[in-house]
Length: 424
Ligand code: KE4
Image 1 (tube, rainbow, N blue to C red):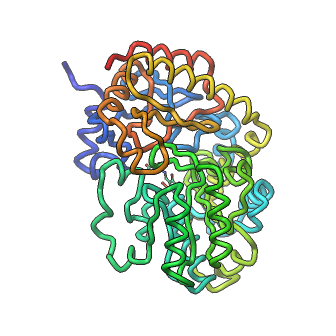
Image 2: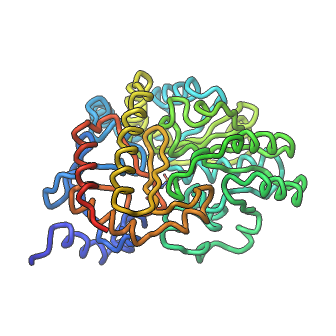
Image 3: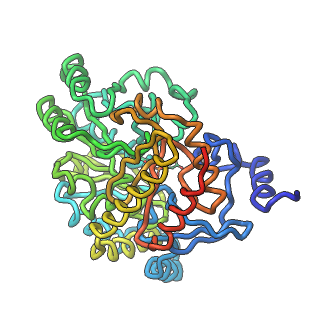
């Protein structure tokens, strides 16, 4: 059988790009598949280089909450491009997007735009260390906060997918200040603070974990983190790169009514263009150069096209019915869980708002060790069969699937029909 266009492109890509992809998880190695190359996307659908029309539950790993090529977003980017692609000087849309983010989240009084979630978390950590004069940082095993050195100690997402324990290239001295606790384990966090008195600058948490697959915070967990950080003088930093503007228009912090000291953003606030941001109380943010002495910079930060895409996206989301979408996802997940359980396999599908992950296990899902115990062979079989039926799921058991406002009832039904035909 002749090679598909995707296979031809992947073979060429592997000659000039490490692993043939520009981000590891896209390589689909965890499910022993080759990646599908995408030619275009519209709404909840992807068109592959071979002309396959697939229903997309990855959503570019989060940005595409409105769906692909949303008209207002595409028009805004097109019009911005006609005004030039980068100025190296401030523009009005940077102010407008910053004002919109601050208006949406009571904990954010000031915000700095950067170009990725990784830049946002790296910068937020530097700020926390600058503000507190402390070096240590607490994160959760399986939590992923981008590929900044300090966070690559038992990280989730791509690293968990490849089971890479830490990674070469990160000096031991760097991760020595990174303290690890199991997600949902307040006692471990309390012990870390007590064993490192006055040394912890910040605690980073994904308020809903999206990089171990989706794991929900147990009742009281987030408030417990808030209380411990306050007690020990550390900054509570919510990494809302995924959950920001997805769990609600006020993110996870709005949904769970917790006020972090700093928040990191990405994905949705760029509408698919490269944007990250970090923000919080003015007293902290004013320490960032040039107003303060904590340095952070970026040639393309606040890029006019990215700002236009983010503004257009948020202007629609501000009036979108998140609850209605959540009710549709709840119904879809309940039916999917019933279909798969009917095939005699252990399955759980934790979900919240427009995110879900399919775990093949009956064990309680509390932290990364629980996720690691799930059956990845069943996951791989499920993934491959769904992909054959043109359902594009996240190619890893350590990722969350993302639903958009563009997913129709027909899209949900097609995914359920595909699941009904799955054999284990
Ligand atoms: P980026 O540097 O990839 O824009 O953001 C890093 C990041 C930070 N914090 C959280 C909670 C994140 O989820 C991410 C990135 N998410 C992964 C997938 N879950 C991006 C996909 C990829 O690495 O290709």
